[in-house]
Length: 295
Image (tube, rainbow, N blue to C red):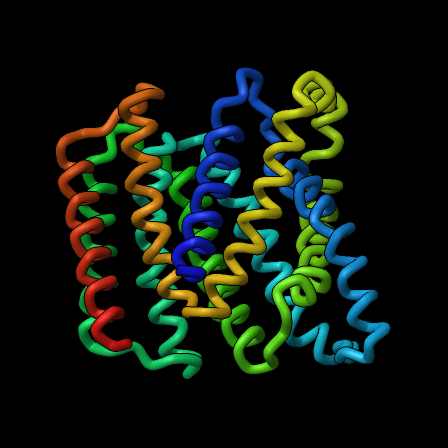
């Protein structure tokens, strides 16, 4: 179906992009810079499309609406990208993906608190079970780094906030996918590049980090293009379903990613971690069954 194809495309793009970022032989330890450069690549195609729609008389946001409804989403997106990339400098891919299973629980809570959507009791139970399995996986982590966990938790909170605000924006105001990205991507790029100017840019010049970009141009270009594809797929899934479903689907994607990293990349994983993650996957199956029944 169309929904399934959109979800699979989004998940595949995000998984490949994350693996490419993690497996660079020479670490480019500048999370703000790399995400800002990727976000700045997202604007060209979107600009042409939006100008075409504007010529046809389509709606354009007022300054007040842009400031109140779009800037928070763009800033949250920037923080999510930066914290997500920074976490990989301290934690294994396996543990980072397991921590990501907390995101549906946080998203569900924010949806309820903001009144955007009231989840059913059965869906709530399944999402909480996903979080419980993730907590068990965290307890079994042998390479626990508090800074990395702090980055990942901050990313989870901002990601959940971004998804809830995006769902509200897309469904209440019925914005098109490309149209919304045209307004949101520059905000995220500007936020990341502004933060990088004060935190990472001076050190990047001192350490010769730009040489890594010139030495691996295809890797950075592929990462930017896959990030663009993942962003489009994210908006498509939220528009046709909801933000909780998006993050629950990510749990299934993460399962394959964890299996790949443990089997082929040699990432360590304890029996307790795998048991906790199995609980999360079981809960994902339950959630999927409940959502199908609701339809």
